[in-house]
Structure formats: C-alpha cells, structure tokens
Amino acid sequence: MTSLQGQRALITGGQRGLGWAIAETYAKAGARVMIQDLDGKGADEAAAGLRRANHDAQSVGGSVASAQDVTDMFKRMDEVWGGIDILVNNAGVSQNKPTLEMSVEDWDRTMDVNLRGVFLCAVEAGRRMVKQKSGVIINMSSIWGIVAGPTRVGYCVSKAGVAQMTKALAVEWAAHGVRVNAIAPGYTETKMLRDVIDAGRVDEQAILRRTPMGRLAEPQEMADMALFLASPQAKFVTGQIMAVDGGWTAYGYT
Ligand SMILES: NC(=O)c1ccc[n+]([C@@H]2O[C@H](COP(=O)([O-])OP(=O)(O)OC[C@H]3O[C@@H](n4cnc5c(N)ncnc54)[C@H](O)[C@@H]3O)[C@@H](O)[C@H]2O)c1
Image (tube, protein in one colour):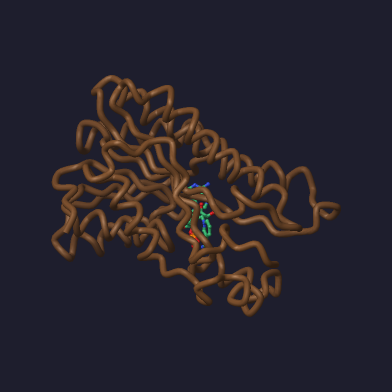
C-alpha cells in the first residue's frame, strides 16, 4: 500500500462523507491526521475512532469560512505536530435552487464555504509549505466545476473557482516544492447527496442513467485518488483537476 508514514495531514470537513473516507485512508497509510469540521463534536468522535484503531489522530472545530477559525486550526497543527505536509480542502456545501428563487445569502453562503474557505486554508498551508519547500494541497472541486447544470449556479461557480484556484496556486508554488491538485467527484454516496435526493431536489434514477458506469461513486474511490495525489507516486502531478466520475464529464448525451 502507498505510504504516507509520518506525514502531517489536515482534512477539512473530515468528520463524515468524503472527508472521513480520506482521513481514514490517510491514517491507514501511516499519516498523522487532524480532522477539522464545523461539527466539532463529530470531529472529536471521528478522531477518537481513529485513535482506538491505533492511528495518530486529533481534531479541531470551526468554520473554514472564518479567517480566525482557520488561523486557529493551523496554530493547532503547529502546536500538535509542528506544521503541515498535506492539506485536503474538502469542506463544502451544496446549493440547489432555481436561480430566480435564490437570495443573496444563498449565494454568499456557498461562496463563503466553498471558495473563501478553500482560499483561506490554502494560504495558511502555503505559507508553511513554501517555507519548508514541500507540501501537497488537494482541493475538492466537482463535476459541476467542469460542466454546468440548471439550479446550481452558486455551486457551479464555486467549484469552477476551486478548479482555477488549484491551477493558479499550482503554477505559483511549483518552484517551491508545493503541489496543488483537485478532485472532481461525480455523484458520490454521502449524506450531502442523500439529503438532496430525499428532499426531491436531485433525481437518483436520472443520475444513474446519465452516468456511463451506471452507479454512484463510493467515498473510498475519492479517498483512493486523494491518496495517490498525496503520495510520492504523484510527484510530477500538479495543477490538475482529476475527475473521478464514472465517465460523467466525458459523456455527451443528457
Ligand atoms: N457527495 C457528492 O456527490 C459530491 C460530489 C462532488 C463534490 N463533492 C464535494 O466533496 C466535498 C465533501 O462532500 P460530502 O458529500 O462528503 O459532504 P457532507 O455534507 O457529507 O460532508 C461535508 C462536511 O463538511 C462539513 N462542513 C460544512 N461546512 C463547513 C465549514 N464551513 N467549515 C468546516 N466544515 C464544514 C460538514 O459538517 C460535513 O461534516 C464537498 O466539498 C462537496 O462539494 C461531493
């Protein structure tokens, strides 16, 4: 198995879903894992679960959209492990509403978490990584950052912004030994997706028909890509948006 032995990783939004799958996978690969989440109690419980399995894990609460909370979470990395080697900018919120029914607060909330949050964390990580001349940042974009769909303008714009931020930071920090890549997941079986399916805002059968592989993704499939991107096997890979989508973005039919 790919080793991340001793690497210090911070995973935002890590108490469930894709973030949790990545946290567990990194821990099994030998990384020291800080689980960050808005749900601080959930983050504490997730880290405790990893420690019970003999992994090195800690937790920190707060919102990635808050500059103060982000400063505090990186201070905690400094205090606990003396810095950071891998940042996974995973925290994100969905937005699915007809544009003409959206409020400016709907727009701001999506941008605050999905874009401002990724920027704030990337800058704090970059400050440390550029100085130490090594580091990996992985941002969670989406198939909706590559193609567009109706009733999700804020989500599409925020995830396309994440993709461009990935490329911009990758080319700025490449000479400093810092790699920046993104994952663009297709529809993945998590609470975020289940909630919008259950609320009738997304049609599961339509997703399955539209996906060439005919199924939803498993969180582990995103974690496997996150493991590769963090590993030495990806040492010449930077500025890339890796779609893990069962063929979704390649498919021309609706
Ligand atoms: N599930 C999918 O189908 C899918 C597809 C494409 C992209 N994504 C992206 O993957 C990432 C994870 O998605 P998921 O499906 O696991 O979602 P999820 O809702 O199951 O988990 C997201 C986690 O982020 C946390 N979070 C929310 N706002 C936060 C904030 N301001 N600060 C810190 N933590 C916060 C939540 O508490 C939660 O634990 C998101 O960025 C999402 O946009 C998901």
